[in-house]
Length: 79
Image (cartoon, rainbow, N blue to C red; front, side, top):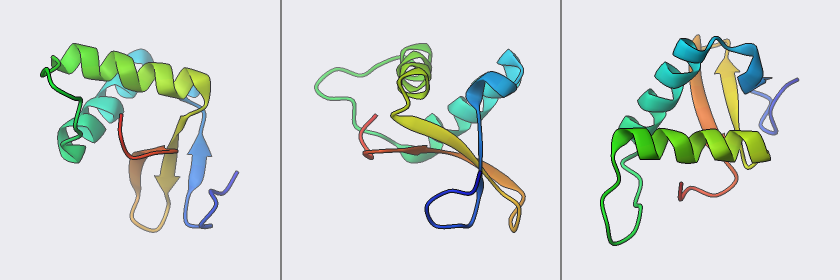
């Protein structure tokens, strides 16, 4: 299914192998430089937070065929 902007295809996180899913999430977490509040979280903690967002439907994985890239899109930018 195309995303709201029409530039990508939503990929269910359950359709990805666990190692691929983790790589996509790690790339997102490391690239985003998100703010996690007063205490710094480990990479594993950040990955777990994004997995929970995906499971709740508050984030989704989008493949952009134009750039052949994959990204995590959240309903709000703070993860």
